[in-house]
Amino acid sequence: MAFHHRPDAPELPDFSMLKRLARDQLIYLLEQQHEVDKLYKVENKPVLSSSEQLCFLVRPRIKNMRYIANLVNADKLAGRTRKYKVIFSPQKFYACEMVLEEEGIYGDVSCDEWAFSLLPLDVDLLSMELPEFFRDYFLEGDQRWINTVAQALHLLSTLYGPFPNCYGIGRCAKMSHELWRNLEEEEDGETKGRKPEIGHIFLLDRDVDFVTALCSQVVYEGLVDDTFRIKCGSVDFGPEVTSSDRSLKVLLNADDKVFHEIRNEHFSNVFGFLSQKARNLQAQYDRRRGMDIKQMKNFVSQELKGLKQEHRLLSLHIGACESIMKKKTKQNFQELIKTEHALLEGFSIRDSTSYIEEHIDRQVSPIESLRLMCLLSITENGLIPKDYRSLKTQYLQSYGSEHLLTFSNLRRAGLLTEQAPGDTLTAVESKVSKLVTDKAAGKITDAFSSLAKRSNFRAISKKLNLIPRVDGEYDLKVPRDMAYVFSGAYVPLSCRVIEQVLERRSWQGLEEVLRLLNCSELAFTGGTKDDKAPSESLRLILVVFLGGCTFSEISALRFLGREKGFRFIFLTTAITNSARLMEAMSEVKA
Image (tube, rainbow, N blue to C red; front, side):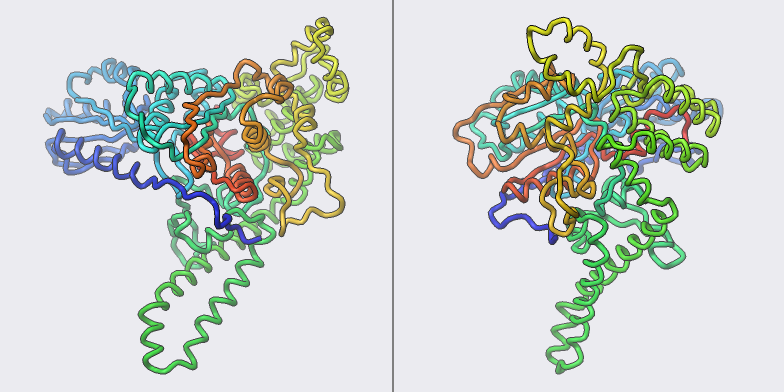
């Protein structure tokens, strides 16, 4: 499957303006206001500088404040006097100033803000680069980043016009939307008269769909992220990929022509594509043989550089594929995927539980074992008490009792829960679900109120047809739906919800789904309802993931856009995957 958008697909807005704005503001802060000639990275070692002024560009984190305080106090002890500037990005928090005050240096430093909250990672992908957002909000209940999200949305509507249609689901999405609307009302007039460039915006909380984020990724970009960790749009390929003795940092975006062709492909198709690309490249090189001097001169000046660059990128991606294959073969990836699919479909739960127990006993990976336990818990509406206690005991014996607090975190976040005595089994629950919706069945509804904290995954899966029924093999070369991002076994819940709402242009008809998602009061619609919005803009959709977004979801929505004639733009608090999700919940740092 060559992954190209239809010729009539709408043009994407130019997000380079965001970079220019942020750069200009930073230059102004550094040069005009603080006369800075050098920035220092906050790390666990002293700054060796003879400069009379130190400027720190930092995230508003407590540990960064402690580091700066230690430096300032060390200078004081040495009898050294200099100026200290702290620039917070994207915003300054009162808690940080309190730490500086506690450390006795608040009067020695001057503080400022650099409101850089949107980093364009690609032509259709913006990131706030706030990996801490997930733990802060979904575990600690800390709402401090909601203002940052609202400010980012306000900036986008200021630059690219109002959003005619707005949809959202989740508590965080609702609060962010309300705060954003307040900002719009306060500065009424900034977007008046502007033609909308983006027709729809959809805000979605990560906890609406934990299942998708917990699944192993099998599209190329997702696998690269799972294996090598993509950070800020770039990846470090080690010697095993570069076939040399050094590592190489590679930018992964649409400018990399090879990567652009394979990023959304199922991994089983990637090797075939790369080998065909290598043959085509060789054929272009071989053209030189029959050339005269003039043709050779043109070839060298116009084509050779591009061919060499393509050859270099092709070698890197072939090396990355080989490295992924080696690691996945070692991990018995096929068996792992088979277990995940069984959990998603609700088959062979006993066998899957035994697989997870073996995974723990063999000490394969503490993060991987936790992930599988969470996937089992969410798909089964919580573990039965016997299984919960058994798996927890085995895990703590295998990986260490220091993980005990992690289990508490996972329970609080709803990722790994135990069914309360009297909780109904999922099979029975799905049969009775029709009765629950009946207003006359008030008592039955009360009896099921204990399931409010459960995921209801089976019932949701059935309602939204998340597990496709396929006669024979699912053709991954010519996918029929978004399920291809999980080998045809599962359509991402988040993407299906977005698809259904966009089809209806509202939540009407999805009341039962909202009830099962425990979001009946947390789904909303809004927007400017601009009747004069250009038809081109109405085919552009901005999807905002609060708490992180996976590359599998991005690939699935790109596929949906291609099929329906839409273009999706993604804004996320950070790129996430199953390992990052588990690490955010873990009290044991790797």
